[in-house]
Length: 446
Image 1: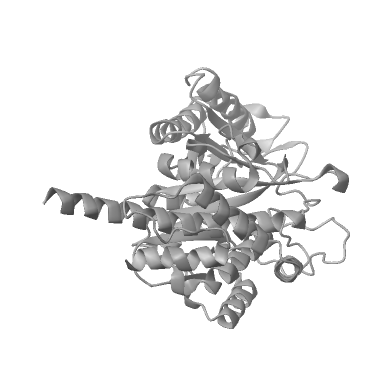
Image 2: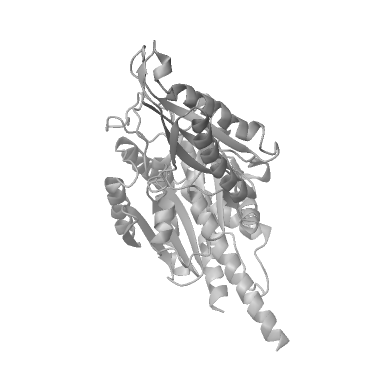
C-alpha cells in the first residue's frame, strides 16, 4: 500500500486529487492528470518562484560561457542545488552537473538542460546584455538552465513522495561539442529509464508546444578538405595546377549527391559553407581548403552520404591533377545521430501537455534538418524532445537561434518549469502503477 499512500500525499499537494480508494490495477484518469499538470503550472507561476527563475536566467545570460568552459554557470547551479538540499555529482564531462531528487532507487527519469553559449557578440541593447565580449547566449540555454532549476525547486518540495528518482542533467557543450555523448560515456546515466528535454521556440506562440513522434531532427556531421595543386603566376597557367578550379568542380559535384543520387522523399543536405584559398589577384595558390556540413534522417543515408563525400572530393581532385584529403574532425565535433522521439513518451507528453495547455495548443512538428545532441541520449534510452513556444506579437519580433539579436520571452519560463515537473512526476506515477498492475496480474495467475 506504500504507493497508494504516496498518491494520497501527492493529492494533498495538488488540492484536487482524492484517490485513496484507487484500485491497485487502476491508472491515472484524465481528471487526475489534469489536476497534476494544472497544479504544477500554478506553482510555477507563483510570483516569488517566477522572479527567482528570471533572476537565474539573467545572471547566466550576463555571463555566457562556451562549451566545456561553463565553470561559473556550473558553480551557480551547484550553489542553488545546495540551497535546496539536492544531492548532485560534479564534475561530469568536465563541467556538467547531475542532481538527484527522490528515493535514489528505480525508476529513474531524467530532465535535461544544456548550459553553453555561442561565440558571437550580442547586439540586443538591454539591461542584462552579455558582459563577455564575443560570447552570447543566443540559443536559449540560459533559459533552459533556469527552467530546470525551477522544476528542481518544485520537485524537491515533494521529494519524500516520489516513488522513484528524478535526475537533473545540466549538460555542457551542446553547440557542436557533443557534451551529451561525454556525459553518457561517464556512466552516470546508465540506469536511466527515460529522458525529457526541451528547447524554447522563436516561431511558436507562448502557451503552445511543438513536437511529434519518431525522427524530428536530422543526424549531422562536418567535413573539411584540403585540395593541393601547384601554385604559380596567373599569366603562365601551363606551369601551374589550379586547386581553385578543382575545388570549384568539387563543390558543384557535391551538390549532385542530393539532386541526383538521393531519393527525393529521403531528406538530405550537403552544404559547403567555407572556401579558403589564395591571397593575390594574380597568383594561383598551392592549395585550397573547403568545409561544410552534411545531414540525413537515417543511419544508412548518413553513412552513404559520408562515403560519397570522400569519393567525390578525392576523385574530382584527381581529374583536375590535384590531391585531396578529407577530415571529418570527429574528435572535436562528433557526428550527431538523428533525434528520435519515443512513441510511448509521445503519448505521455500529449496527455500531460494537453491537460495543462489544451490539446489545441500542441502543434504537430514537422521534421527539421537542424540537429540536437539530445539525440545521443535518445539513442541510448527512450527520449523525448519538444519545443516550448515563446512568441508574443506584442513584444516584437523574436529572432531565430544563433542570431546576435536573439531574445527570450521570459513569460514562457513557467510553462517549461511546469512541463518538466509534470512529465517527470507522471512518468514515475505511470511506471509504478503499471509495474504494480503487472505484479498483481502475475499473482492472480498463480
